[in-house]
Image (cartoon, rainbow over all chains, first blue to last red; front, side, top):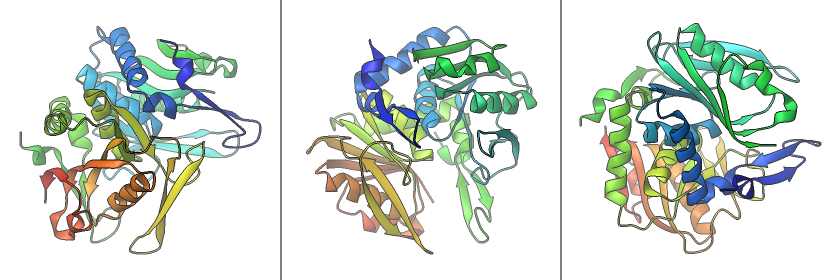
Length: 170
Length: 170
């Protein structure tokens, strides 16, 4: 299936000069959405994944569906103050300013086999933050998977120590 | 399955006097998460649902999984400025202040059969906002479903014109 047909280009969003790759037409199309989840599942089926870790908000959509399909647990990573129990946090640099993500301290036990999943690999900052959070708790990262990869931004180089999967490349 | 075993009570979150019902242990447990999705799917299987509409962020986890299971499209409803294309918006009152939610204008065509899904039915404000957004675009709401219902808050009364499903009641 040509998944690019279901990605809508939005110029100048969220700000001037950015070409935003909108995944809502893909989510909207039951066949395309199913194809994405089934393709991930096929690629990952022998990895014995115990948990999927994904960041809010778009990552939750794919993370929820793939957790169901693979029969594993789902672990949400959120912005500060959203998770109600004790958390570990990681702060990382953005183009302007910083961002912080949190994970529950009891989300998994050490050596658990974990898939990190997000909708988009751009500069790799969020993926790196997810990796740091998981490794700080001794999780074993089996793969890092994305629906879309913006290859020119070189995010893959930042996470080259891990198997990286992406379904659509620009 | 006794799903309440997988809900963690967090006193005084997000503020003093609130008893927060934490669903992360449920998401974390592959059997409990699967049971929730399968139970929704069983209840809704003859409804010919074409789209699930859910609000960020926790609603996305269940919405993604159930869309996959039912084989329907998924439509995200988000806070202002997050959806990149043309949106309709609805503003509603909170205890203090207001909140606004947006949906893409081209998310579905009139008369589409829609399930509204959220993790929690509390006062019903968010559910009402989702209903207003869907009906403003002539969607046909087949049911409104929740993982948890806080019955004392009476949210069900606000949406009594629709079939309401909840899996866990407090």
